[in-house]
Length: 159
Image 1 (cartoon, helix red, strand yellow):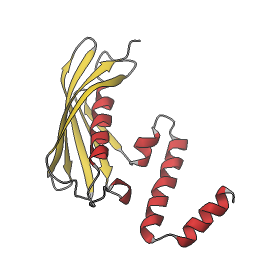
Image 2 (cartoon, one colour):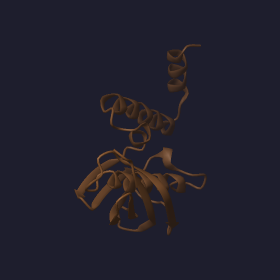
Image 3 (cartoon, helix red, strand yellow):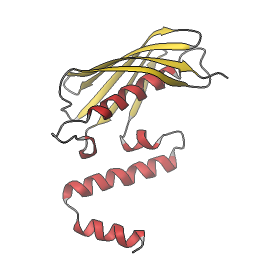
Image 4 (tube, one colour):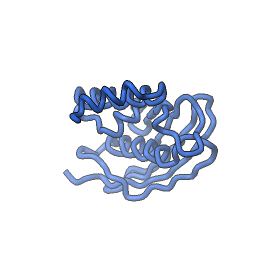
């Protein structure tokens, strides 16, 4: 069976929730193709990024069936991915950083269940050193409920 046949069979037999997930997958592949700077994970999780200033960034992730853990709330690993991506994106844009940054350390505190329509991570620079950037971030749902907080250290890639 080729991929077209498999996809058609899946679509014919899928539930509404499976169709919604399939549409998210398809849209993420299209978005990745159209924007080569976008990573597959950022595309799949539908991240929307707003650089507020050189020390502050917000990244939004809409809730979807793809995010659920086995008890029906957002999987903690995906909350950590949102935090890591937001903090790392901001660390890559601090003054004096021309090449990007990679995670050295990330500590996440989960404070309440990941329930909501969307999750907004606010990332802030605590210290911009010669080689390392110290960051903090908080994830809230659309109602402002604090879901998780994190601190992280990022290494500036040499030019």
